[in-house]
Image (cartoon, rainbow, N blue to C red; front, side, top):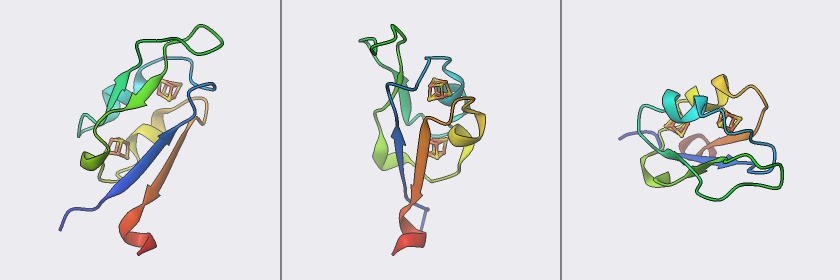
Length: 75
Ligand code: SF4
Ligand code: SF4
């Protein structure tokens, strides 16, 4: 069975560099259409059901905006 993950992005910390979107092998993330309070267009989670908790997005984020929960490890 594939690993299941939950990814959470702090949209106010995100500067919209899009590195996490490019790094995700499962196309879980997309760019938001509205800006945060700093004027950046942050990443958002659009296909949470596809997340496999690989950690790629977390690894490339320069600003520590991403938290990942491995739902299998937690159960
Ligand atoms: S943990 Fe992996 S699969 Fe889940 S959103 Fe991040 S890069 Fe994509
Ligand atoms: S890598 Fe981090 S700062 Fe860049 S878009 Fe993703 S969450 Fe935002």
